[in-house]
Length: 158
Image (cartoon, rainbow, N blue to C red; front, top):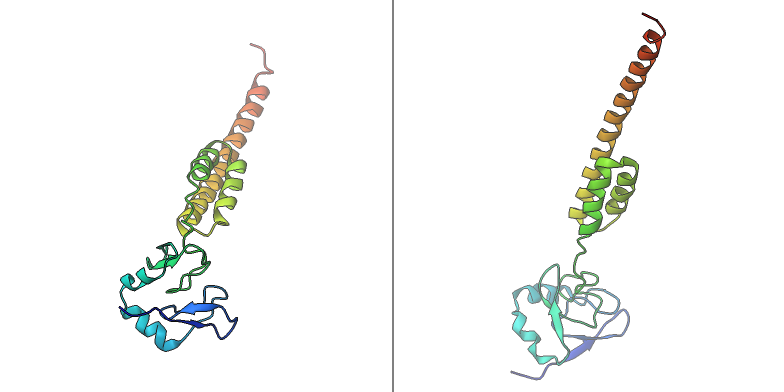
């Protein structure tokens, strides 16, 4: 096992390692041939670097914790796990059923998140809130109609 050599980014001058496909500072690709070679390399080649590494959430390759970009796939913030927003999802469903206006606010919040699963819940909550609002509107209309007819016939004395 030889000495680990490093090179420099042509865009920003940051020091990059030979197996890196993207510069960890600016994100520019290092070399098209290096990208092809990286796909065939083993993750074990990263053991030469003393910096602690963790798996990228997108591709799973080991990336230094100090890096804001994955060197293999170019993912931004590779160590940041996807947020689940489970509390907002649960509250959104509850409010969509019982207070649809507030449910729509939660749904819009969920639609603006990056996680596609969270966006899906936001879309479903908007549909539920709209359906509940339509049902509520019909119930209020029927109730008003009933109260109007009740007061009309209640004026007669028997």
